[in-house]
Length: 265
Ligand SMILES: Nc1ncnc2c1ncn2[C@@H]1O[C@H](COP(=O)(O)OP(=O)(O)OP(=O)(O)O)[C@@H](O)[C@H]1O
Image (cartoon, rainbow, N blue to C red; front, side):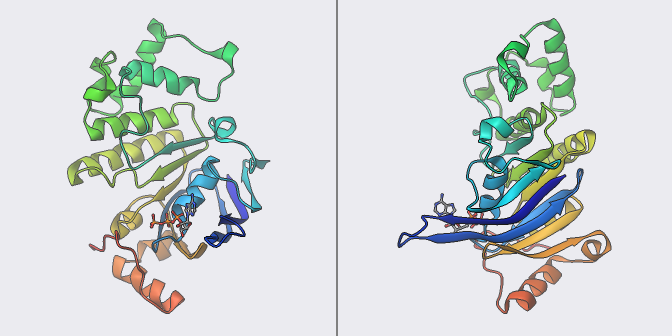
């Protein structure tokens, strides 16, 4: 269970460039909920993910995971609870290291020194089994340097790495936006497979409104630092891309402005 209580985030407080990025975000997300996050430019979507990841801290409000307050925990301390995949496939992996070295590194995340497992035969076999889930043949290439992989392969590996320690929450920050359409579909399928297998709680930011309605079980729409719409179940199943846009203008009195939004229905 991920609980965000009255989160406020202000950048450059008290300066001329003060920016109120989040204005009282309140939401409870039960384990296994897969939320897609959409909204206008500068609505606060990435800031929300950054607060959950611990990259930034809120000025007001609390973040709880399974009733444990983690609001002030740095990224490293909450690494075993929160996994994250970014838009850029180059960000989640170390290019010069091999696939198995990258996976080993991910396996150490959030673990104390004394508990660190080495790269032995058993470990390699575990990695092979994990990689075979991706269906990309990477299980045959454990000693392959990651820099030789394609963007899609790297993003698939990043997904595995981000979820290796069985985190509670997975943050997906437009993680297919930089991929070509068919690779993006493949990565989404892999995402669904991993999320289902591990019963993860997911927050996925996307600018593709159709994808936002197709993926997961719940969609939130943000504008000016607030959640203005939260739909799931039947209401969501009946919503179309056109319906989402209409809802936005009804709620805000103007059209959704997002220079990257994909409107295809
Ligand atoms: N590190 C920062 N320093 C100053 N202002 C910031 C910082 N990060 C975000 N902001 C500001 O906070 C507001 C929310 O930004 P955020 O990136 O969360 O929006 P977003 O919904 O992800 O936008 P987009 O879809 O355009 O990427 C914006 O006005 C942005 O300029």
